[in-house]
Length: 226
Ligand code: DC
Image 1 (cartoon, rainbow, N blue to C red):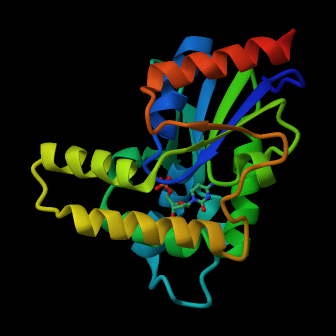
Image 2 (image 1 turned 30 degrees about the vertical axis):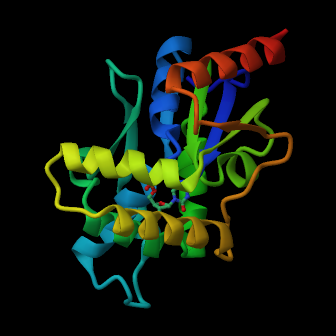
């Protein structure tokens, strides 16, 4: 049921800053639903690249994206993405889909469709919305906006260790360069660049564990609801 009183917390920030982990912990703690907008752009990248060449100028984005729907997972409360009623979450976290997402996320028509999908998630007691432009463009009137960042070297080390643990063959220099490029592309693109939203609270995760950041956000939440 749609509610006017849904409390929205936006969490934007750089790649590898920990915003997904923090958003999940926060959603669990507050029993809010969770919208990971990066997943929506990955879904668009996935379905577009499956149906045509990404650079084809005649793609009907609106028609394709209208076949996406969202439903919160019963256990995690995180929105899952369905394409023609089939769950596609498991296909979205590959290097190729990441690249396709980065291409389609720069298309104005795609962002317009996503705006509507993102707003359809505003229901119930609360929503955690994470991404790049949640506080600046999509939910500019959210009562609590967070911007998460961490030192590039530290983000690269974390990502490098994660991938090593998964057994992937990577070098620190490559990871560092690719994060640097992503920062640059996220912050300097023409539409919806990553930026600190008006009235956003900046939290730096370089020296703090996710739990400590979540505590800080919970404090800000308590202050803003009193
Ligand atoms: O956070 P992520 O890696 O899952 O995001 C996938 C892509 O979507 C990435 O290229 C950035 C883009 N994105 C965006 O343009 N706007 C958002 N609100 C979230 C992600």
